[in-house]
Image (cartoon, rainbow, N blue to C red; front, side, top):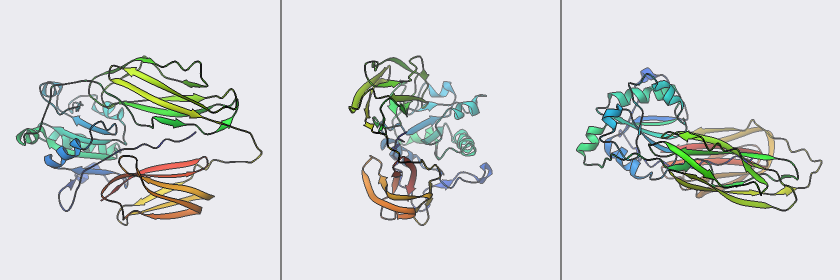
Length: 332
């Protein structure tokens, strides 16, 4: 199955002593995670840089009564005092970027700590909405759903033998703060594609839903189709492409042991696999999906120096036949 590359962005320029770590009582840090306290101005700049980003979430951890009169645009309410707090946090995607705030900062600090113990990777404690208001930054009373996607909107299946079936996972999300309800999905019955989509599914703010699309070619002609999801939070069109191969006796095993390690201090990425690769493709994508590094790898190990990259977040991807793996990483 072709693995999709998840593109996400982060524009927080943190230098010197402009941020501090979450208190150590929450336990050791994961080596590939970032948990930091940021200023109100940094929070404002970060939020302003992420309009429509499905990988970016603002959490308001005040009570619903505090949240409803005034909150940040698209902020999702997760009540710090709710007895279901842990269960609610467990429904959230741990790979997204979170900015957390409350009234005075204490509840945001607590929730950020809990998120750290649950191994959320990128959590920024912005503290108090009172500081936000004092700075004259905007708030809203609006709540609404918004449909987004965490995977690629152009899906290309691996070439398969006629009559066989390939599947790829699609992950969609509610990017805003009201319940997302689906109205319809385009009919795929007259194509060689199908989708295991549940139209009765509802999504609260910042929650995701995964489903599979399938390709089963009836002939040797390449196929393509676009289908659309319709919801009360907008429409989303996904393009599917498939092709057919003639079976051969060549064995093409899949290696599941590809190792990618990022040395944040040395700004180097190390790749290793017990399999020998010939012409494996190495790519680095920036925040908007532009390729800013491309190379090939022959053998079973390699090193990529990323010190040339500007500050920000990137996706490193390695592909060799059916062997695929990707990793998100920051550059400071």
